[in-house]
Length: 334
Image (cartoon, rainbow, N blue to C red; front, side, top):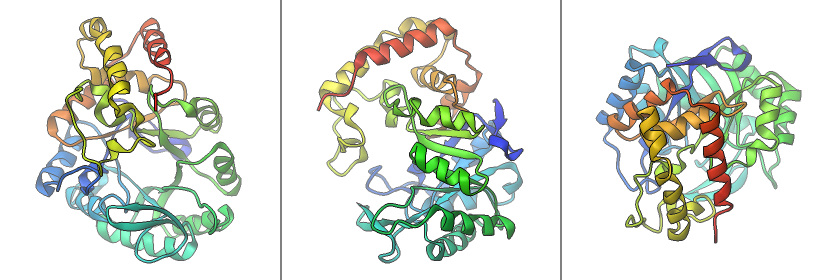
């Protein structure tokens, strides 16, 4: 496992990290998770060298954080715990964001809801500090909380010892700069894969310029880039992968094109003695500005597979070939 700096924090975190959205359960994932299995998964991740564990209150409405807390009992010092704030569902506050698992979710980075969120997260995680506290989404109209107010609150938590470092997620380049102007942040988390590359234009270079850690999510496009989601797979209407706005590559015509691209890499799988998941994750980790890749994992076998990606170094020509193949797909058809 490679360990890379979490920006200028002085914290070294595993380049392959464990994302725990799926462990929160809910209709998005179509399952009720086995908490005992989830706890074993997290503990196995620690045993195998992963120390960066990413979660959020909205993942299962507190359930994911609680499971992470139980898994880390007695092992808290072995983990870099990253959680988030800014998505609120207890009562209407902030700006309406979405209907999610039968609840109305609001974007709220107001100091009053942040004060409630930090205490709830600390309690669920069973800890008195959070290593990386990230704004999950920035404020949006009509309740457009000034970044200065949000950062002042987060810096207060830092001064109180409740959080070690501050990060942001899902921001635009201008929003990133606004946070940087208000105080020190160490990380930037965003969606990025070889199929979803819009952040390469501005956000990745800006993060590198400011020496921020970058935490990429959905880098396997919810399993599509593993090659294991065949044309016969049918998704329920309420599953995340049925949402064309978020997952357009899962439609049958687009899926066929992606699977054709992946089938063309059989020689690379033989050359590197790896799986498609490992090949794609290694490609992602090798891109300029990328430091940490979050992998959502359901099973111990998926975990073991993902971890081996950290051992893979792809030759420049192969990196370029894979990029060219992804570029050749163009945009997903609608």
